[in-house]
Image 1 (tube, one colour):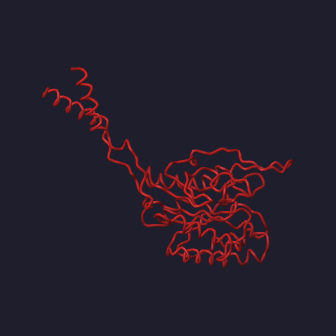
Image 2 (spheres, helix red, strand yellow):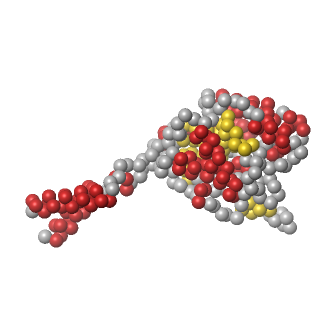
Image 3 (spheres, rainbow, N blue to C red):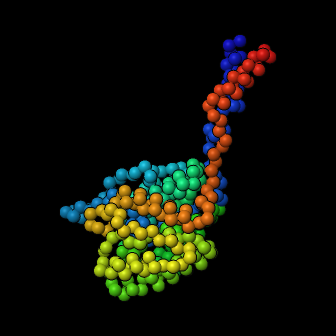
Length: 303
């Protein structure tokens, strides 16, 4: 009698346990893709320090909770294959520099939390390279071609580019001509990128400079804050904490910036981004126990 009751128990348990116990990943076609482009602060220098005595630059390896890996967050590697996203996101893209924490992971985590989704499949496409001017990102340049090629590769097998995150401009604050032409060049880049990606209305969230590198920082910031393209939103990073040297955002600042970028994107569209959730209906524990007992009584009554 006892062995039979045990078998009956496991049979009912298997049939009654909430289906949410398994979480298959959404199909590749549902991948939401975000392009990360610009220079060092987008590539990520949070936690990176330079030993002035030896000239050696190192990353402290500290990854805050808002930037930790998640199986549902992928990154497109330099060889155009998808892998689980981990800091530093740009390690094989901005490979000539020491990379640390950037805003990308914190951005995605904030998007997922805001949308109350646990299993949306997100693809990050790192493209940023430190120390680059806006002229190095114009259509036809190596960096522009690499960015569009990586974006197109990310779409293979399905998916949709949801937004471009752009943080660049420090290198254009050093010379007057670069600063004065910055707005025209930046607008041209955004217009060309949307056209070449064949994505009219593609949201572009850009960051206004947080650091004062050159004598024409305010000229570049005015250009960034003065962009009036309908699909472009600007997040002002001024005031966020900087690493020693006054150029790069600290790790906490990068986390804060990621959250600011997420809010800017979510506020720029009528409805929250539609990511896919594999959450299945669940049964409250009390209801589950009651259902189990009722089933057991019925079966015992037939024995």
